[in-house]
Image (cartoon, rainbow, N blue to C red; front, side, top):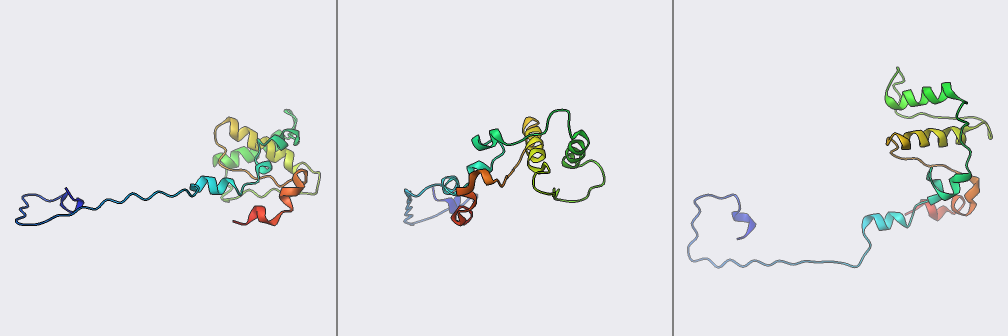
Length: 133
């Protein structure tokens, strides 16, 4: 029966003509994720093929800063900030630290998102259409 009667009780209908029309409409247009996939920068992902050569921290280095960042991610301490901003001069190890942190979060199944800007993939970084829908 028609949905308008789905929650009724003790309803009586006399002498009515009920016509139900069902229309299924399907298009050949891409789904949402397919549209997004056409506009990603694959080299910016921490586990991208291009990032294999990206620097990572040596296992026995930067332990204090890695612990500080991982504590911040876990919500420990009195950081209170919603974003961790890492800055420094070119070549100071920001990418290595970021790649290492992303790798640790991935291992712990905590990585939600990451985006690495890199000069290694110049055609994607310099093409403005990569960042516009």
